[in-house]
Image 1 (cartoon, one colour):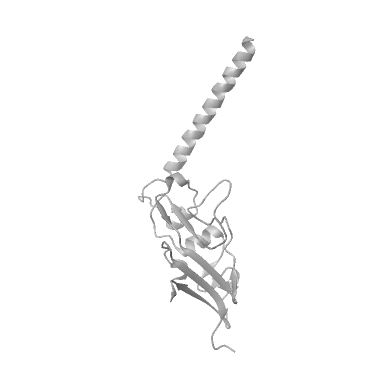
Image 2 (cartoon, rainbow, N blue to C red):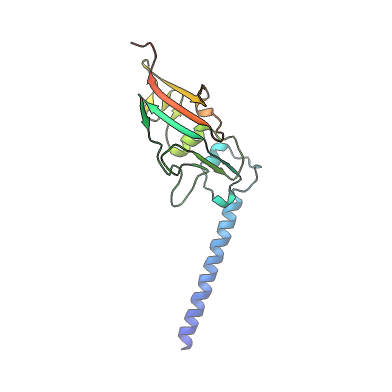
Length: 171
């Protein structure tokens, strides 16, 4: 009987020690992201890092739409979300809402989101569509033309449309 009791007690102590190690690890992990904006990391470094909801200090939702040759492209769900990591810039569904949930209030850019997505975006390319003699890339923000492209600072409720289309008056 003593042997079973000893094994149970040892197992319980081992479990408690493991749980403490995990808790300390999570607290240490969170401290990496809770610098309150005093970090010297770039917005791209923060965007590509992992975070936890409990450390969110900055939370906005811009909306992105991409149209290529008149066809609306799907913004995939769970960009920036895996079992091991949630990036501060991510999506949850396929409707184009970008969730910016960061441990620091920063001027995140549209280029930061595309970096998390692993896709190309600039005035010369969106996804696999490249500007050429007969096609252009145009971007509107809130209905107004913008030349900021990857440098566009994301804002709450912003509506961004990127369009790959034939150059007007090209033949």
